[in-house]
Length: 180
Image (cartoon, rainbow, N blue to C red; front, side, top):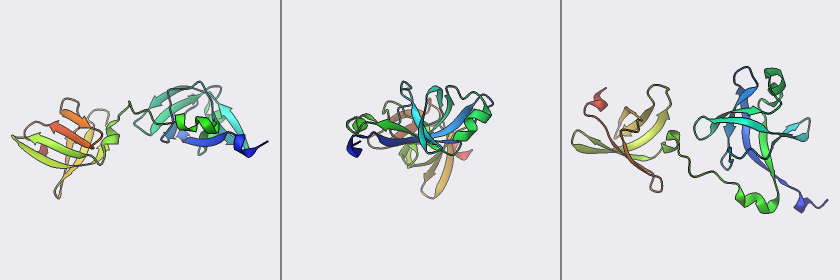
């Protein structure tokens, strides 16, 4: 067989750990993986052979994490063989350019490193988003303004606009929030 006609292996994620008791796993997804399209299997090397696995459930946890359930791997024992392994797609060379990250999804963790402009107590303060802290009850942005760090709620009500192209966020926050 001509090597140039062989499908290319495109790594699209890694199985990190078990999640729950029904065979779900926590995975890290790499850029370029369209997790919503589960018509095609992902492959994992099992005993040196590319083994196809279909998945029936995927629940995104931010931009790069997800909980995944593989078809026919419905117990911890059956799915544990995949822990720590990379999974990939087999792509014909001419199809390679069709694999890309879906730009329509934006997660708050994607905003790390963005410039932030806060409208606060009648003035404008500029800084940088250092990190997004995911919390079920009160997600926060850890921002820096000059030499100071602040935690502010990452609430939709406070976000005025997000400019992806220029990596800028504008927020209007309640008076006194930076003193908390």
